[in-house]
Image 1: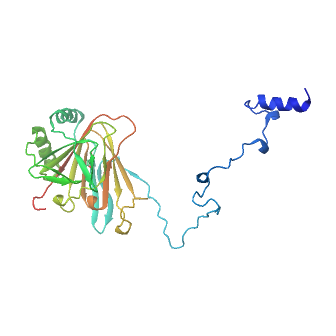
Image 2: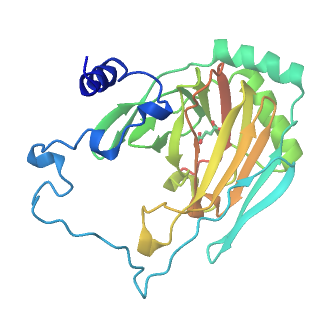
Image 3: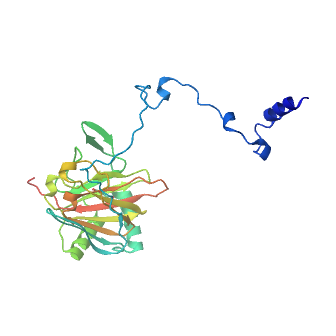
Length: 281
Ligand SMILES: O=C(O)CCC(=O)C(=O)O
């Protein structure tokens, strides 16, 4: 075999071999970009335009930095913001109920609450809620395009819990929305509890049972940037069994909250939100 033929044969047979000093590919050997269909190019509408776009910061545009997330672990009072609407305050007590009490209550509520899977109505479209709910109260409650009928059949354990909560906090509640998150796929999306029947600056007391879930709050944008939540302040907490979280002041005016879906397994969790509903709204 001539030298030239030997070189060619070794290139074909050794094409897949690990590169060695004698097997280094030159630029000439690299696959060439094929000439593709029009949509393959950078500007698919006009492939003849090949301008390089250079980003220039607009002179008068304010670049807003996202404030670092706040992670709340310490029990007590946390003021989230102070706006003309007032102070947004949460009170967090991770061990409001002890483990055995919250465990017993979880089992009772899981079996005894009249759970239903309801639907939200958004822009005329109905979506099945990714959780179960139950409502207790003398008055109906309307939220997310649905109406929960009055239900005066409070479970005895709920009356005891309400009394205990009222004694400790000095607050009075007349209704309760219960949520059952069956697993990590269940959630409640960003929202504020700002329905007219809760009136302005409602105080909402939220008790958790069962598995832990993350709870997040995000600051609402100013009216001129309505619905643009880019770079908004985020506050995160873990709500474990037996924890109490109270939202008060301007929290519902200035913040939204949610319990996001999670990507690792979670067992069932029950959340009770005690509220005051006003009849004349
Ligand atoms: O499950 C929770 O901790 C929050 C429930 C909630 O946001 C609500 O009922 O409005």
